Length: 118
Image (cartoon, rainbow, N blue to C red; front, top):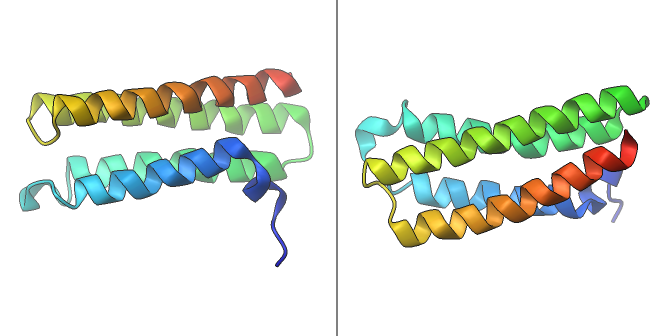
């Protein structure tokens, strides 16, 4: 089976795993959050992997760097929304810390990818 180049990136693979985890977590959020925090978290997490994929397909280094920077910003948006989810008692402190470790690893790898092309 043919894989696109972005699918081979470890950072994209990690972001994809984060997407799945976010979807499973937000499925447990209160139903009144379906169009609020739940939706926002899902869209922000998908934005991370989508911008990695789009950036990797760009020809110029400047374009690649721009999309990787957007992916990083979306990742920080996810972290912020998870902290708010904890504050609202939608997720536990244990879950928040688990996400924090994943996001830290992903952000470090994303920064390394960004630096490798600039």
